[in-house]
Image (cartoon, rainbow, N blue to C red; front, side):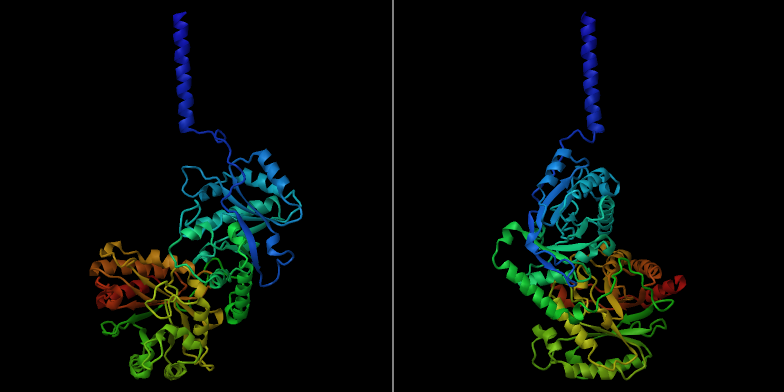
Length: 567
């Protein structure tokens, strides 16, 4: 009898151990309680609609019924039945959907793409479309805000896009009646997460959402009308109806409706030139190719260490208003032309010798204040057969104030750019127009229009942070170029790298440039490159020595040979 008891106890211990082991190492999918279907993460209301083509005008904005749900890998039938039965029959319904991410997953996007939610997505979409209401599904919104309030935020745009398309396709397969909503917050850089027009029926932005309240990467816009305009402006490449959402607490603000109306009225007033010169169907992948078999080679080389190289085809000049006024621009330009080189000309509308404040340079531009200076520029650059790559007010999108035209209204910038590029109505055939962002996040907010841009210029410097002194910590040309080229995908123009450089020992520079040449050889959309052969401006770097991008002639020639050998 004692032996039987011992065997029983021993067997029980073994079974207990095995159950514990398998639960720990092989957790069953449905062992934990299912996630509640309704959540309170996105308690938001539709407070406005912006629709350039009047496709979503059948109902007022405040008629939308909104709710937020979480889908687990299984959907409780009772919860789903109750959700559907509670939907109003006579109102359009906007449902924000997020997925219950496994604890061991960083973002959950991979789980979507692996098909782990396929059954629950189908079950959910099948059920909600049995209801008579118009159904709008907004999946994993505010993805572009650089915080981690939600697991899918601040992830790779490419992975997010793949996951969004995956979800949208399965919803549409369940019911084509479902309207898919792409819902960024409207934060700078939202366009990087655009999944393409085929997958999206409606877009949305959120006013003062939870994510944006935590974000510090960009300064908050204090004026509410301007803040709304900026969000809508960032969505201009997406030719879809736009829902404007706000937390329900903000919805009760009696002035909100009027603020939205004023913002929309200002946008419509500014539309000519800003909304009418966009790509008719923005590409989601850059497909443009350059016009020549190898890129044009240029240098910014004021000390003239490299300009005598036979490889040099263009020289870069930076000119401000003072240089135009005192005649030094005319002299420098003619010296470059005398060397039979093309000219990359960056016009900086500031440092005026006549007392006109630099803080108003963009407004001064469109008001005709600098017309005499602009007229002088066009007279000089039109009097040669050498090609002139004309760039105006570069790196405008960086949220700093190194230049007077930075951290300004993007619509005002676009108007100023267009004014300058259209200044000479009889534009000479040798002039090419260059739009020159740094290539940072949110660059396309400052896009001035297809009709005034021939090339996009970006800057690529190995140093990612001014506090880094170790050259080995510099980013590769590949990493920087891939990031910046991707940000230009919606406008699809040839790229001219009008500034690039690397600091450090010569052997390090040589290796970095070899890798840069390999990247350029693999990217036919690059029309030209221009090396910045000088140290940066000491005033910008404060107490830290400015980076010196200078290279030797032998290193430069080696870079050019590497380009030529592999094109």
